[in-house]
Image (cartoon, rainbow, N blue to C red; front, side):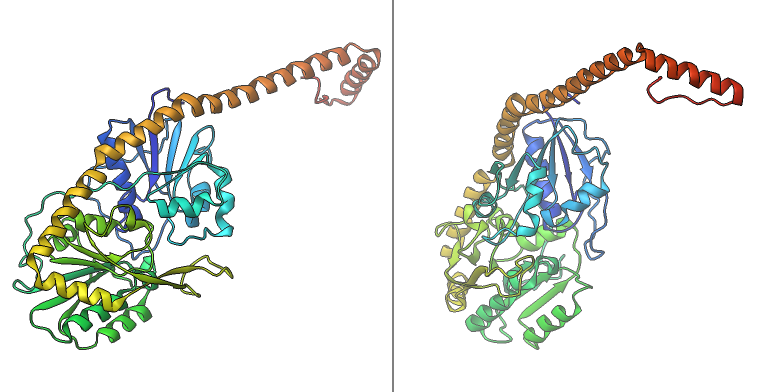
Length: 431
């Protein structure tokens, strides 16, 4: 085990979806704080809909040499980590799970995994509150960092309408369509601008979603022939995805719940005014001055979300009428739009700066290495010592038995029998 205060990071390193970007965000923070680290990729397959982004220079290795593991795999796939990676991956390490969750109820079926970990990290207070209620281990918040490279890609390069006002909304079918709630965004847009508007468009960027044909058809049927709503269903390179956000005028997310809200934070970091539901993880970086928050009512999730079982759970139902008025206000009032966007950019730049978050992580790792890792080593050393002591006692007892007359007689009889019958019988305690 390495004595250097480093960290082994396991996650969806190259995957093009939220959990992949989340682990890359933590790598960015850890790297900015000059914390020694290695990267371990997952050893199991996930959906073929989720493509890989290999344009980064992240080096992958199989070994986890440091005393601390950061396992950024959500609890629903945690059993695959245990079975797919080297069985010794967790052994003798201080194991941290990085989990995100979108409801205030944490599923009973996955609470046993808490016992495997030494502590849990989460990206928001919302997640922290949900998991801490059922955890006997520390649950600490480390928000996702944001740092988007400057892109020069224009609207023309992305085949976007050059002169129109663009509202942009994004979601991944794997993130549950009912939770991302694009239908409320569509309704708010149509309340504000009617159908086939010639000045404003709503772009909805989704994943390919080959396994979600019924949901895709339902969404297309909702849009119908409204030419002011553009659906983009393709995998975009990271630069193009960043440019898509950068070329919009307003970003919209009328979600029902978010564990963090990574795309919202990214849009804000680019100076875009964001309309979003005033509920869940996004409130860690959004407020009524740096964004346009939409009031809501809590409603039952019913059977629209995973792992809730028979438990009654709730999420937000955003006020569509209020959201439509915000859309119109941002469309008409350039100064208001600029003011909100600038506040968003400045506040997110500081709050979600990789160096700031990296420093928080470094401080926690210093504590872990000072107070927690030595205890793990002490526990292991104690086990080894106890086994050595037990072995010494048993060896002593065996030596004493071999000196008794009965045992000596049995050995002489066994040796005589072996010689007569040409056998090579031995007793297990002879060695």
